[in-house]
Image (cartoon, rainbow, N blue to C red):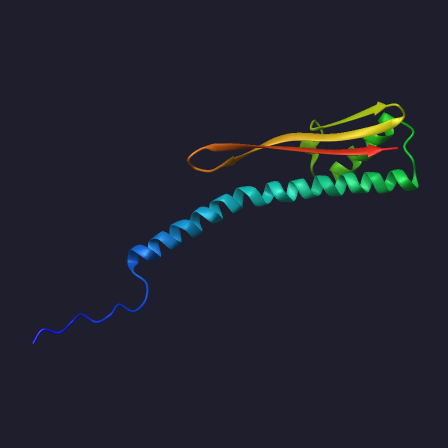
Length: 122
């Protein structure tokens, strides 16, 4: 007598490999993106700190605001970002702007990521 093959129990090897490849690709992207996200959140925190400092001890001008940003960058050990910000004064208001580029390697292409953060101090 011919017996019918038993139904498969569990995942196939091909299905398991596909799932592992997808998880590996997601981890590869996350390893690149998470540090960029942390850096972006740190810049947000620096701008909030400068804004809070401005409320308690108003900056006298561009140089004071620039010094405050540099001090916050040093505290956060982000000295490589000192060339990524500008401080301008227009009509009595001080504007601090961070602008920098990063790259996300997606294997099939390199995706440029542009970050721009602005703070207006009155």
